[in-house]
Length: 350
Ligand SMILES: [Zn+2]
Image 1: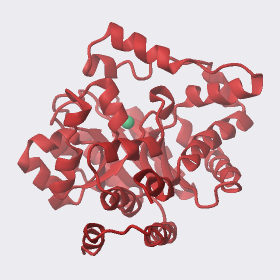
Image 2: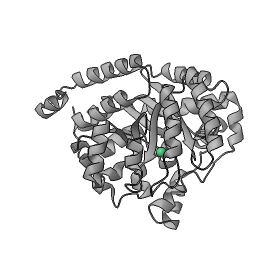
Image 3: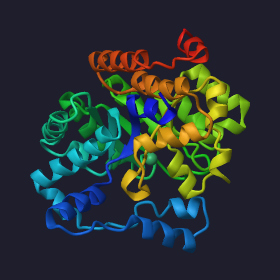
Image 4: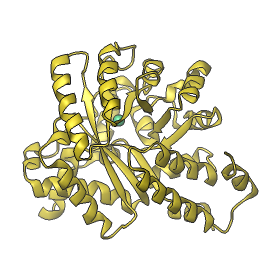
């Protein structure tokens, strides 16, 4: 079995994908209307020509809406766009995807039943695919009243199946004030919601504050921790899992070079790492491609399997779903004929 065969059969998991609302609406509508979808490759080329890599380019991440968001008011289209995202992941070998939604999407009336309907549609073709939803809380420090009201809605939605919360805030590349977010996080943790936060994508700022947040178990990106031994130790001590998005980091230029991506350093430091697509339509990537890029950075088959194992362990989903997915992962690993001594030793770790 060669490397690409074993990658194809490995169950994959993506803990960090944004809903890409109008981008998926565009894909669904393009197929129905028999037209080409928006050309993201040309958009990326334009942006790369206009803006230097790093913060400026990253700030343009949501700047294009290829179709009107009004299409989202149609429940059937709304369901179809979530199904399209899940289907893309399932077709790329995912057993699990967590979709994070901004705005009022995750607290919309009837949302979870439409989300589960989308999941069931995809499971008809890909039975092992499971999906959950996170709500993004933005600007808790800027508008505390609004953030409180949104938190109330999220806590209510947790009864219907909302799985977790993702914090986005400003400033992002220098230290933010985490006091208002900690206050909300305590409420979310009490309600049983999983908690993650974007941090450490552009610099080491906010990684320590995020790692110490009540109830937080994961960080989106966090890659710049690799430059600071104390931060690495903090992530290990706090048991924080990092959601690493290699193509996203490369395109937005948050590191000098993909070849210098600290993925291996994070893994070797003992940090639990997972792979993620972040914005797969805009970046033309898939979760399979992310695993393939990681393999290109020198990760072994056993380490690639660990990304899935770490993701399942850190997933904001039921123990029942986790057990089923860990069982599938073990079965897929067991079926491999070329299971090397290095792999065996790696898998035998506690
Ligand atoms: Zn993100």
